[in-house]
Image (cartoon, rainbow, N blue to C red):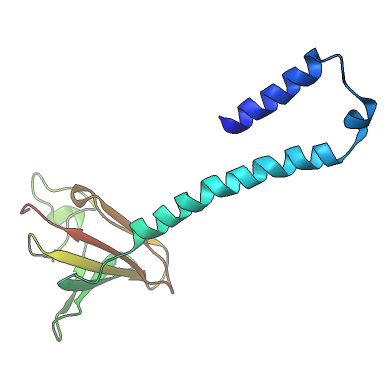
Length: 160
């Protein structure tokens, strides 16, 4: 809004003013100023937004449970880091074993279980290709990228 107002005011003043000078129209200083000024304004608008994006992605240290999810071709591996030896793989159920009411490509043989009303930190990575780990009812979706460890946190308030 500020940039549009400034450019509109300058355009209108040049068009309506009979006191224009040929030196103003030919000089490059004014062109440099009205090119650099909007860029500086945009930088001052972007810096607080980038700071907020960084702060929103920050996970606090108060999480009581840490789970590492590793995406593999056609299955996920889960490791409860706070407990020794507690890890398992979660495979999709074949279509011929599905019962009525179960969703194709979404049902698994072992589900990840988290306690309610507990801050949970998820560490998400992949072994082969980019995967997407999502729980829409919790409002969580994180991409699992090979060689990168992404993290998010959530709190399950309801069972199920």
